[in-house]
Structures are given as structure tokens and as C-alpha cells.
Image (cartoon, rainbow, N blue to C red; front, side, top):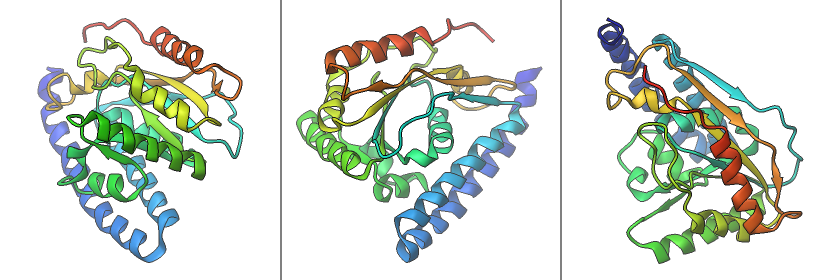
Length: 248
């Protein structure tokens, strides 16, 4: 019964979702071209606020636990497990004052209203996974910009999303590159739970009443921590915070 009810509500959600992407695409273009980075960023922030709120029509409840006070004037490396595309809007909105930027696959850089424009013009980096050497150079340049601007680099070190909530092994090269080229960073580990359930039926319908949690863990100061130790610690913290998967 819940799945049956989810169909019309999912259609309503996608109507709101698609309209928002279209409207905010125009707003992004205008704000970026006329007012520059700051106005564009605020436009993107509020777009993601609405994308989160529309999930409430499906009974989705998103909890973002972030009890830590982070130092000002330091770049961040935000490291998270990855369960669905719905991991991204809460990170953008709830950590918006830290200017989160993403390492994304190049395919997302075209064809998606609002999303593609933000990835190309908002400070993120688009990489070709089939060209690892070129991708590494792009990540280095991206990391250097994060260090300079004191922004935040967001990375999902599993490389791809987990379709059942069970974490994949962390890939080391990308994260260690960020550690090397953002040496003054604070590393913020995040454990995401139950986001995968929103994609359980390949995003149609979206199940009703899912509780998605984001839990940040004790930040790690790269200035005071060996990079290898930092990698092991961040992986352990994230994995410890991932709940065993259960059926719905």
C-alpha cells in the first residue's frame, strides 16, 4: 500500500524538483553573470534548501548532526560515504557557510539544468574517470584553489554510491591528493545513513517515510596529524557511524 501511495507523491515531487531546477538555472545564470560568485553561491544554497524541503511531501525526514565548532579561516576537506544523489543537497545547505565544492564526473557537467551550471561555474571540478592521470592533475589544481580560497572540498572516497547502504572500500589516491595539496585543512568525516533507501526503486517511486541521517565526527587537523594516520582515522570514523542495513 505504501508503495502504491508513493507513486502519485513521487510524481508531485518530481514536478516540483524539475520546476525548481529550471527556475534556479535561470537565476544562477543571471546572478553569476551580473553579480558574480557570492550571489551565485547564495542562489545555489537556496535551491538546495528547496530540494530538501520537497522531500517532506514524501514523509522524508533529514537529520543533520553537526555539534562541532570549526575554526574560521581554514579550508575543509569533507569526507563522506555515498549512498545516493540525495547525499549532496544536505551537505550544500547545512555546511553552506564553508563553501562546499565537489569532485564530480565530467558527465554531470552538461545536460542537467542548474546542476551542470553550478558544477562548471561554482568552483567544483569535473573529471574523466577513464583518464586517471589527467583527473589527478585536475584534482591537484582544484585542491590548490581550495587551499587558497579557504573553501571546502567534498569527496566520496568510495568512488561510487552504495546501492544497499553497505560501505565500499575507500579509494586512497584522491583523498591523499587532497591531503597533500590542502595542507592546512581540517578534515570533517560524515556518516550518511538510509539515503540509499530513497533510490531503492531506482528513484521511482521514492519510498515514503525514510529517515536520512548525516552525522559529523570529530574533525581532524591535518597540520597536527600524519596524512596516513588521518586517512585511517577518517575511514574508521565514517565506517563506525554507518548503521547496518535493514529492509523497509
